[in-house]
Image (cartoon, rainbow, N blue to C red; front, side, top):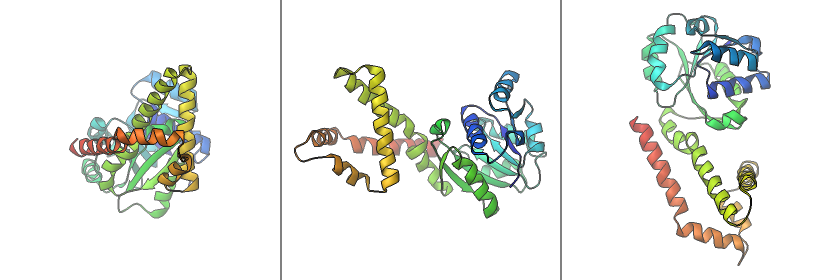
Length: 266
């Protein structure tokens, strides 16, 4: 499927997507155009990726078959008003703003559009993103699969109902922050035990990465994998019991509930 991709806004997340797309070979760099606020940003993108750039959103709207709206959520209405009369009749609009509903975006366009709501998380920057995808009813299966393949180029994807996006934000959108805090705490403990800080963070991060990979690749229940590490009268079970005393699980659940609640009320 030879389509031209357009990015309106191309900050860290947009750049991560562009890098993944180019590296995967799904779309050639010649068929990607991105608009940014400043000429310096455009020049930096063009230099890094070899894509075409502009500071004119309208140019992207006129050329692209798939338009990624990668601007801040508060900018959506104004950007859509600027481009809605210029997009191609069969263009696919991809939003990257979990808090903005499909119906609201359609109302802003004030015309029949093919719309796919998405939410990647920041590990997309290193090719390990987790993205939620929700298509509107009029998106053909072939075109949905094409968009999924684009998001798979910088991580993994899951199709979710729009009502589940608030939970997704708590589970994947915000969870990198929880994991970074966990790694930082592990690093602090290791420093207390005498391990140099830089090594401590590297060791902790690799331990977390390896553990996550075990869950994905073995498809075993996390509790079963935990039990495999906990030998009778061993060191690990002592640590696990202490974590249970401190309410580790309940703290995570409560934090995610707060995150979901905030997302719903934004």
